[in-house]
Image (cartoon, rainbow over all chains, first blue to last red; front, side, top):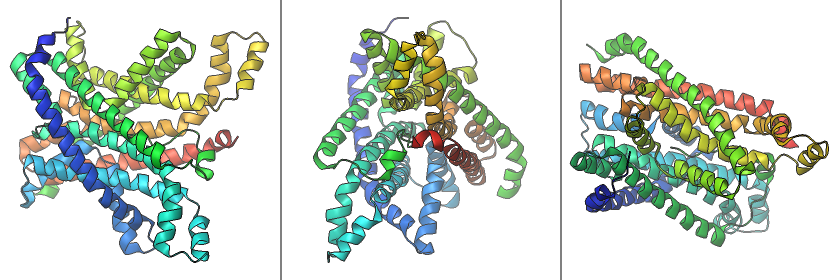
Length: 235
Length: 219
């Protein structure tokens, strides 16, 4: 078996277009997912059932089912109920909701990783609530939040490849298109795998910079108890 | 047929699909642990070139979509003359992917084994393979058992991707029923619920394992 590089040269414009689309879709999902996730995380931490229960249900439903099934449900089952979404719209909605659910858990964990007494001391010293959150809780949770968020962002990028099964024209779709023109599946798929790799590595490097800039060294019982991180990223 | 009647009559087929899903993921974890141990040992005991190769492999497996990996493997296997059933190809893809994640867990676990124990074993003239088998790996396994159950859950969800190469697991079964009946709503909701039940039940297992191995993690 030999690797035919002319396939890659031939498919370059198609791969480039796919890459741009994948970056675009993931950016939308990540940017849209973050506020959704913050709301979900706060709702899950709320003492009031009307906030906590729906948020918990939503997050757990999304985290405990395959993304592929969620996409099928949105794209194939919703039209039967009268809501018809285009492939790209359905894909974007699914990816954003999915990002929101996973980011929410990262944010919730980060908030819980800061001992409650920190916020309470700030309040006791007369700091307004929001300032105490911003100046005391937020900096301390970054050491937990940023690595967890990096994992989940990479998960979103990787899972976005699944959207090609409902004909969203992302990078995985580009591989299929090149495969259709050249009949060289291995070359096409290896090429997009490398492109995904570059993309996830770039995101990881970028987040590492952010971490260096914003994250105070993590403290608290979490780090002591848990030498092996139990959060695994998605495929 | 009404949605409800369709779901009811499809339930046996869906449950058979769920069985295949569980089988593929369980095999994926078990073989993934073997791949992971091999990778970890190569990284710790191998030379510089080997270490670099392992790092490359782990980074690639973790940095690219499993969806693409499954397709690459699906097309590479016949190209190198291996003609095996789809289920086997799927399980191989899952375990090669999972192995990379497991090797990272092991790497984390290794740092928790006190250096002095290995030095003591060396001082007693224990050969390296025995040190790994009797001293390092048992402790590492107690540490990584909880994340391994999480890995199992991840594979139950990830194995849905095997449907794209035609492995008739839960998702593929649902697709086939929908294609035959044109009634997607009940079937997809039921499929989602079946995945949810499997993952949720396994999460309970995670909590139990976490409690059982707590003593190793507190030290």
